[in-house]
Image (cartoon, rainbow, N blue to C red; front, side):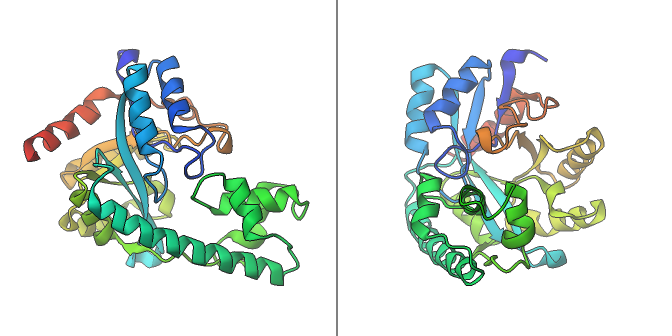
Length: 289
């Protein structure tokens, strides 16, 4: 494969839970010879304007995106992630729904701070916001604050003791449904992709059922290439894509220093996603516009 045709369709900046700026991602992509890169921050489009400007400045194809948490009622799976690619950052639907998500996130974060305080863990919402830097606060930022204040010895301990589902500091998210997320992406002119399907703890037959349920809702694609996949898993995801007429997509899920073993465009060293993956999706978009 021509190394100059490598792409990455799943990355994060410090506008959600990554450590690079949107422009910093573009500069790194340029340095590593990546032809096209998508910014898919969690539940926010705040970094997209700077990201797209940086793409023009540095001569890299930049793809505006997002990663949405979605409520799922199948297999007792509380949350799926839907990536949107090639959307219009100025679409009115995004402005409307981002405001709703902002308020839901803040309500959740305040509840988590209060629950941790009841456990004797004295952190404030200002502590967590300062650690996050950007607008999006995740449990990773709570873990960073707990570690900094000496309440835990490792970030993993924060999740195993306090922040994971069922633990005393955990508060569930208020989420849109999968169908609402897909519709939001489509109304913004984007392509909807099921993110990292192997991370949901489902067997292959369950993933097949999941795709059977999501495809009629308008799901366009599935991540067939991902940093955590084994070769067998990649092969299985490609089979699902073919069976359900979904676009194969994928990316590293790069977070910078927050996931130090994952490299942009290369994941854990096993990724090499060809530009043709995005080219096929672009053809679909061009026919619709």
